[in-house]
Amino acid sequence: MEVRELVGKIVQKAKDKKGENIVTIEIGKISPIADYMLILSGNATIHTKAICDYIIEELKKEGVVPLHLEGYNEGRWIAIDYGDVMVNIFLPEVRDYYKLEWLWSDAPRIELEKVQE
Image 1 (tube, rainbow, N blue to C red):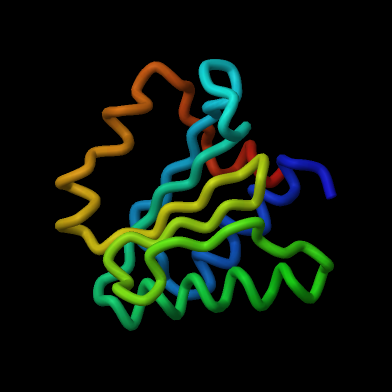
Image 2 (cartoon, rainbow, N blue to C red; image 1 turned 90 degrees about the vertical axis):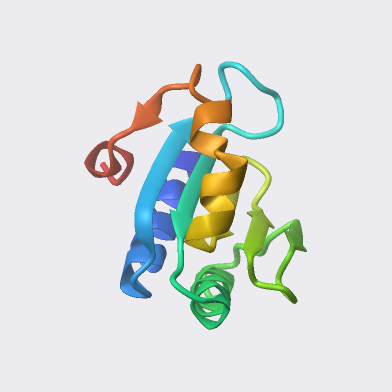
């Protein structure tokens, strides 16, 4: 699966589970850790876990499994590592505290419609 296709699928799965304030950042040009980073919010720990579970379950059906999962037990900041794509699912107050969008402000944001092309 192409990286941009994977990003589009993750974004759609997050939307399906009512993920909020989804931001896609193309970090590959300034960092070797991944090509894209997705940042989104859930409104409670049960919501962040449900988003995470759905993304992982649905992509697994297509043969795509995460390399690593971090923060699931607490559910305040869940990081899913798909190699070329990092997914960060936050509670709003934790997202505000860590400010990943600001930290990666040098990287271009990608419009969701362009990701899914």
